[in-house]
Image 1 (cartoon, protein in one colour):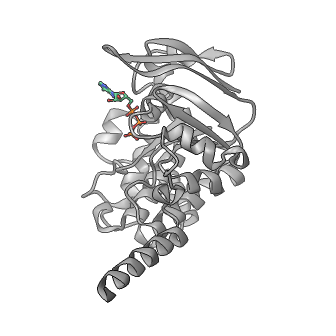
Image 2 (cartoon, helix red, strand yellow; image 1 turned 135 degrees about the vertical axis):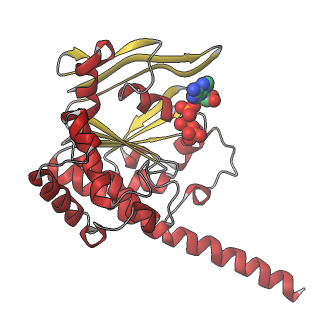
Length: 276
Ligand SMILES: Nc1ncnc2c1ncn2[C@@H]1O[C@H](COP(=O)(O)OP(=O)(O)OP(=O)(O)O)[C@@H](O)[C@H]1O
């Protein structure tokens, strides 16, 4: 279905992605992990054609999508919708209009200019918002919503394109643990119920383990791990992050339990210090 072959991106002397290869036979939920600068965002942006690759190919249903131009390239960008850490909504525009922006590629410039949407599209947008549990917020300005709600609006906008693949670049990096959980659960449900493939860059190991069927680890632009969450041991994680023996998984965790544990540990230290 989807095969990435020796995909490479150089920025001058810096190789952000170095001969990255992997293939996916059936829709999966895939997490990409690695430290900052490992090349995760560059990889997703090349898959979506936001960034041009230096070399390599991305095969989908028998076509190399890196060769697509014009309307075909835009159609591909609808087939694999992207969501971002900062949501990329229009803050002062209402939630429904933000979601309807997902239909831009199939509407005329004039209709877009005058905000003319067919009622079937508006109904679909509200149904998607309802599915994501935020239909009540439909008339509000996007900026009035919490981060987790805004990210669900961004997911709804992506779903308006009816994509086969959703690329999520650090979708929960700006969210608190509770909202992070809600957003990851939404992505997982979209994968399971609709059969859409989700590829998400994640900065926390526990999230990748908990929600993904497959985890790809990147280091210095290369894939250094590709396996199941069960195969992602602490030793493997240490290699991916280039960390020494003091590496603690808790340091890369956003789970509520881990947060509570680290807060309890910090409290114990403060109490011990106060007692001296
Ligand atoms: N537009 C650009 N111009 C020059 N160098 C870039 C550009 N985009 C990324 N890079 C470089 O490519 C490398 C990979 O960056 P990338 O953002 O893909 O990593 P990442 O794993 O997504 O990191 P992070 O988690 O911090 O976003 C880094 O060294 C980065 O500085």
